[in-house]
Amino acid sequence: MARNGSAAAAEELDIKNLVAQHGIFALMIQAFITLLQGKHRPMNKSPFDTHGGVMSAFLAYLLLYAIISIVQVRVPQAGIYCVLAGKTRFAAGILAPALLLLVLVPVIGVVILVLWAVLVMILLYHSYQEFMQLQ
Image (tube, rainbow, N blue to C red; front, side, top):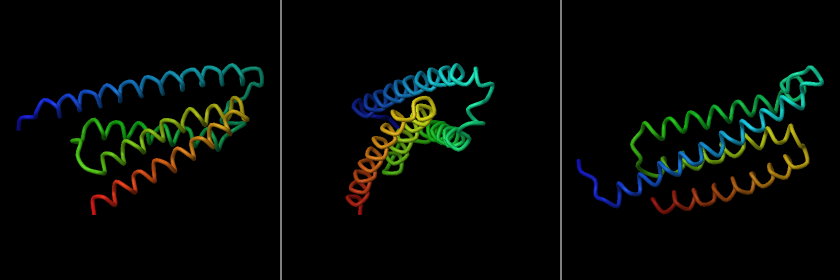
């Protein structure tokens, strides 16, 4: 089945955006983990000892981000479910470093989490609108 030029160009742009997002999230997570190690080294404790719930949530959202990313690459891109998966991946990708920031600098972390919640509400609203247009 042959693709037209605009569909192939759009898919290539989506892949480039996906790679750019992966790079940004990976860089932020790596930087924050390095800072966490420096912050907790003098205390001889792990961030899991001091902030177990936040760190467990970080791992859960990081895993969710990774699973959705793999599914998006492996499964053909079609329909509203692909759009919803992309928005979920994006929200999880933002939340993972935000949780690390919550451990590093709690005040800034709380502000970022509030902004994340607003972003999720906007994404949910737009997803609902797209879903209702299909019916």
